Image 1: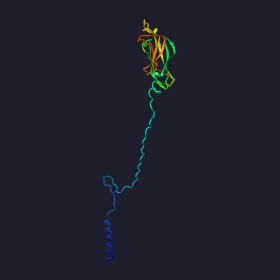
Image 2: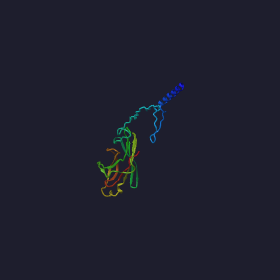
Image 3: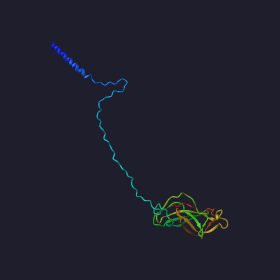
Image 4: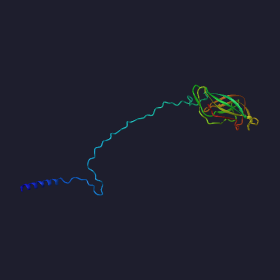
Length: 214
């Protein structure tokens, strides 16, 4: 009887200990609510090493190029003082004469010409006779002239005796100089003439000139 009682007491004690430990932990998502969330700490994650690109300071190359001074290089305008003028290759055609106005670089540096010459006749007193030449032909391009190099423009001269407005008495007069302004210059070059006549009327266009070409 005593042994039975002791066994009963031992079983009761064990049952009490189990009751104190409480039920096994379970995670249950409440109905209609958000999903259950685990309270376990997240596993450690490797932190990516920060990759920092080295700082760069690109520097634009410095140009040492210097623009040439006007008249001192290939982009400088040829001054009249560095040019000579001659008339070449005259050819007659249908009441007109065509001739080349040749401009030669007599200086010591390369220079350039671009544009149309200014051309007119002068009488013995230095006064202009008739209208100055009009421009004709293709647009101007830049011509580079090394020392001793030449460029030219074509001058057309209409004979004064065939133009209306030049047939009246006193309209045809002697001229002694062909005055030529090279492109970009305000100083004239002069070609002496002999036995040459021109129309004095400024309303008659007797001269026309092309742009300078190489």
